[in-house]
Length: 129
Image 1 (cartoon, rainbow, N blue to C red):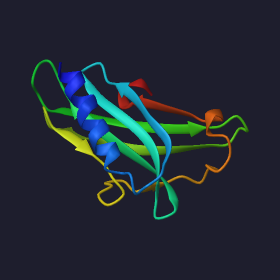
Image 2 (tube, one colour; image 1 turned 180 degrees about the horizontal axis):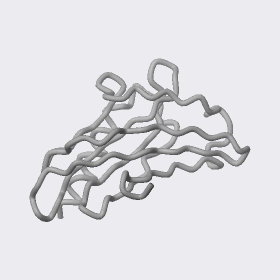
Image 3 (spheres, rainbow, N blue to C red; image 1 turned 90 degrees about the vertical axis):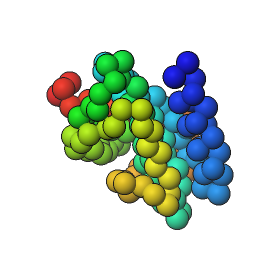
């Protein structure tokens, strides 16, 4: 049920981005302690920007200290990596980045004007390195 509420809230927030073109739809990842992370690429001020939405649904009802890195690669061998340092995510709190409130305004240098189906977004949590 919690996951359904998170997805509905995320979709509602994404619809709020309607003035900003979604270049690559959200891809979801889950930490074993149940921190959900969704990554999308949205055009903010005419620049491809990585936006992250998180939700801590830890079954033991505690804050989680987590860091991760996002990597984006395309079929042409181009790639880039974005680092999100370890920080505390409060239990039950959803954080939704948008063009106006991005905590980490990461701008992509990849070509997002061509076939984006050749791109792949991956996320590695801090403990997986």
